[in-house]
Image (tube, rainbow, N blue to C red; front, side):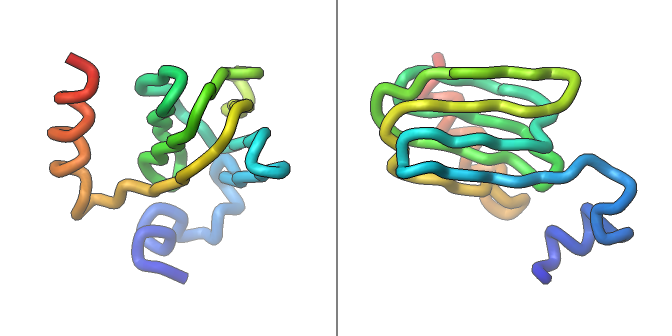
Length: 102
C-alpha cells in the first residue's frame, strides 16, 4: 500500500466510508467515498474524497447523479484523465485551480 492510504486508513478502511472508482467505457464514472464536490464544469470535476483530492478531466462532463448522504457521484461524458492530488502536489494544485476558477 502507499503511504497516503496507510496514513488515512490505519484500520484498513473498515471503519470509514469506502472509496471506489468504477469507469464504464470512458463514458460513465461512478465514484464512492466522496466528501465534497469542490468545483465542476464540462471539462473538469474536483472532488474531495476520503482518499484525497481527485481531479477528473474530460469533455462534455456532466453530473449524472449526486448522493450526498452516501457520498456517491456519477459523472458522464468523455473521460480523459483521473488524477489524485496528494499533499506534496496540493499547494501547486490550489494555485492552478484558483487561476482556473477566478
